[in-house]
Image 1 (cartoon, helix red, strand yellow):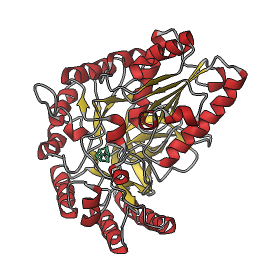
Image 2 (tube, helix red, strand yellow):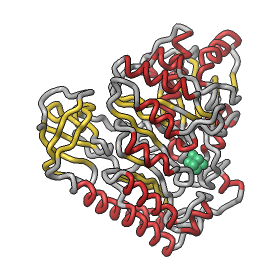
Image 3 (cartoon, helix red, strand yellow):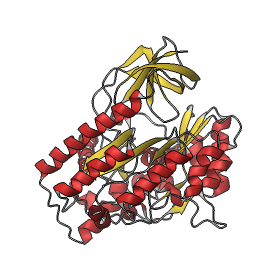
Amino acid sequence: MLTFGCQMNELDSELALASMAEGGFANTGSAADADVILVNTCSVRDKAEQKAYSFLGRAARLKKHRPGVVIAVLGCMAQKEGELIFKRAPYVDIVAGTRQFTRINELVRRVRENKERVLSLGRDDEVVSAKRLRVRDVRHSLQVAVMRGCDHHCTFCVVPNTRGVEASKPFEEVVKECEILVGSGAVEITLLGQNIDSYGKRLNPRRSLAELLHAVGAIQGLQRLRFITSHPADLKPELFRAFREVPKLMPYLHFPAQSGSDRILRAMRRGYTYDEYLKLVDAAREACPEIGLAGDTIVGFPTESDQDFERTLELHRRAEYQNAFIFTYSHREFTPADKMDLKDDVPEDVKLARCNALLDLQRDVSEKVLSKYVGRVVKVLGDRPSKRSPASRVASPESSVSDDGSDPRPVTRDTRRFEGRSPQNILVHVDSGRDLKGKLYDARITRSSPFALYGELV
Ligand code: SF4
């Protein structure tokens, strides 16, 4: 199984694997040995789709030698492209959308028994967790999807088209899933949703994210709780109070602004202004002075002028993000911008120049924010031996995920140095010489870079 895209996709892949396990299949971890090749796809950027097609090309060559291999394309690109995938990649057997993950085993059986192709794009799948738990490899830090879909219609975004309207997982089910994971050894849980501030809107009785944070935060044995991703138009003051009232809730808030220009924010249909966004920044810092803020920004949105871009630079200076995910605008089919025929009119070289200028500025801002930790002792949750290669600077929009699952570069790890996360979700490296995975420890910070802190065990 190969997964492209965000953390939500990683979780959906677990559902697909759980479904396959019901049919007696085990995960081989390598396409070359597999009888069924599952590709869970992403549509947020054109590049992610190109990578999926390029992988499918490689899978087709495998199928030439072993014609019985079943190839299935799942998730966002499947939902968006539908039948087109069969035209472009005729060797694909299954195209299944974003709410079909629990049915994959049944779809594979249909292909094998009837020797037919299957297109399955219905939105009938529940936001389920019980099946996933059966195949879940319990680690110390886990994510739990609490909702799917999005009711917003940001003009650049394909998510409402691929994932449908917001649907929340029942409150008690989320709490139960978290209890099971903590009982199995997880010490940190991150609640995931495309627009997590809307959690519970359609539940009966209606529930809120703040209530959920209180309930999950009360689970015995859980050490750390996080949530992503917030929408500035939906953030409620009671959520900021949760940072004070729920001791296990870590002081980290990822809430993408996307632009600093009111004109562009209106064109993006984001539902807030520059001033309103900064009021939230100030309110978050007032409620929780140690909070770490992260943002996402798109540069080169249609009609963006130098003045608009100046406002974006100003927003990054003023918000003092500890980290930000920065992208150039990529026109996507089936987005509101596409339907409105909004011309992608900012030249690529201008987009690139603005992107680099913003990355440089953000690098300075991050350096300043992270340098404040030098000399302090921070509590770290150990994760794994540190990477030898430098950290990536760019990730995917609104998902807070930096890895699309397809980076071919091998990652080598340094066995003497261990990496973990501070309460603000900042990467912290310590020279340890031992395994600190899943352990909470104090690190005295001796130096910083724009991307990480470095220290020694206390
Ligand atoms: S950018 Fe986020 S809030 Fe806007 S439509 Fe996409 S998923 Fe929803």
